[in-house]
Image 1 (cartoon, rainbow, N blue to C red):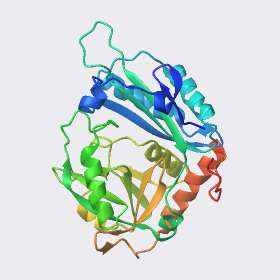
Image 2: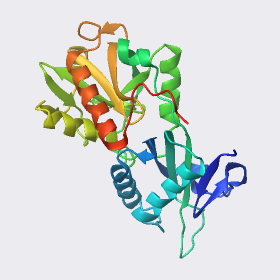
Image 3: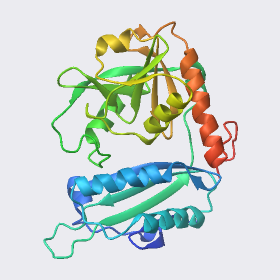
Length: 292
């Protein structure tokens, strides 16, 4: 079966999906996107994804000709059209054509493919992360938004992978810990959970939000504050999050072992809280191998 996508207002075969060569997303990376996961036909935390998307569209002054209900319907049409049960989805909105019209229109594209998570050994043994030489610009107007202007992140990820690392961590120009190329970062120290503030600035990850809520509900103290390299290297535990990686333990930063060099106890507890949350909301089964 040919892959189907939702383009602007309808489902089309991917081979027939055409975007104008004058689209600002293609020409200048003027777009925002959301990556979502689907289990048992249900999108995890869809409302949070759409809330973040609309906040970015408003902040970046993109034209909008759809609402929450339209996008929700379009997302589920895309899932059904591709006959997917478990899926990884991407919703992209660009600023539309580079033209000065009275009625500008965005370009909307929704794609869905078979869900593929991270290798199980990453969760059992933890991963290596490296430190990026690039810096997060705390004055940037797009730093807190999930934009398609992603080349610097992809370049740093390529460097990380060449070193056998799963992620590369960014700091601000002031030396404050920010985030990974595609993840939020958490530290554990003395049984407390620490994570950079949204004002660092960082992307307010959907998984990050869920982890903070679940941890607080479980009686774990969560502290959002400015963190520096010393905090990272002296942490008892470190983990990363996004909706695809979930709670991913970090056991080494460059050549430095975190804590004992093994997956930490609190990381394991928070990971279970997150998986139980996925199971409750979407019927997620960790051991399931059927990703059709």
